Length: 221
Image 1 (tube, rainbow, N blue to C red):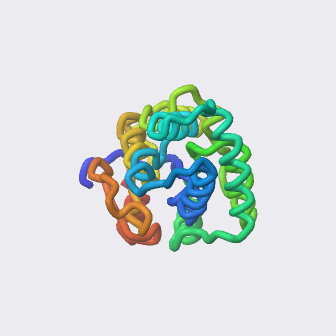
Image 2 (image 1 turned 135 degrees about the vertical axis):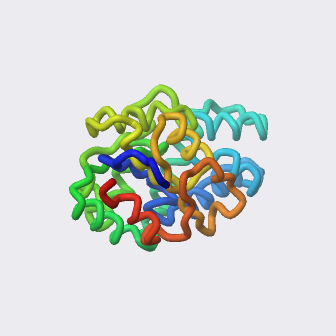
Image 3 (image 1 turned 90 degrees about the vertical axis):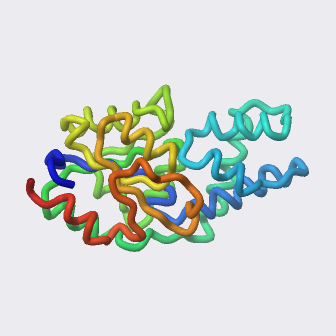
């Protein structure tokens, strides 16, 4: 990446990027739709991945002609998700090493997730991971969700770095689009849950957050 800008701040997506929680969301959606006699399909999963709650549940309503509001579905799904979360979930491989490297380089970092504040607080409670970030931006804090760039423009502003000096870590098409529309550098994680997701707009696609190519982006320019 010759000619790249110096990276002065980092923003992390959460689900599927920092934690193996996409499976929890999948199970929650299966329960939610199963209660109504419908199935959660892989196609629908790919469609909503990375988007904020309103988009996701309005898509459910549109797909299955459900009578509830998106807020009602969101509240119910959140309760299901938090219950399933208690069964356990893991950090994605390489996350701790990446956070250690960022801290060694004195790069400030934040979380920018499409999940709600309540869900984010629950997920980030694992190993007190929230304490390693300057702040957390959730769907409750923005008006336009991914792929709109608002969340990453907000992250850059709050980190006090220009968007072109921000590196974003993502795992969804919507998230990568949001990062690139914001003018940031984007490293995308290719994992089991997103094998068929288009990540082509990312500056770098890796199989682990500990990939040396990710760490090389943090080297002095």
